[in-house]
Image 1 (cartoon, one colour):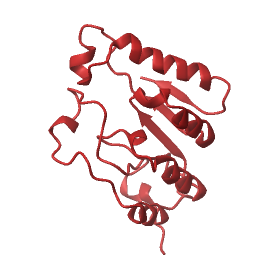
Image 2 (cartoon, rainbow, N blue to C red; image 1 turned 90 degrees about the vertical axis):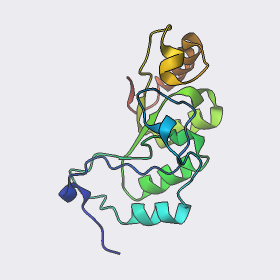
Image 3 (spheres, one colour; image 1 turned 45 degrees about the vertical axis):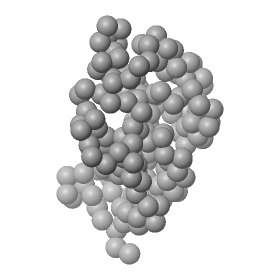
Length: 162
């Protein structure tokens, strides 16, 4: 199979949305108005797509598995990410952080060592629930992220919270 040099087409960080569901409904995201909120891209389609990407493309920074979804809601995420990593691709995981209190996700991230971005977005307690479309107190949400970051401190990968 011929490999595609994605940077020739302007892509430096391509995104493959492996699932279409999210555990938030943020006011700044198109997810709440999406019609399809339950589909999953078939595993063979994901692998076929990854197999076509030229991992030696020097301008290709990362492959991600999000767009308007939460990748950690898909129980296949770590299998997909490991497949991509074994193909020579660097992985970036962007998550809203809610599921970073699940041991399988914590251990999976520590094993994968992705470039990790935790998207907090709204740190105002008065607007948090409305902005994120979630009935979860800001303090509880932030505690989950902080607890994860404390655990991740001694692991060898980049974590950024925005």
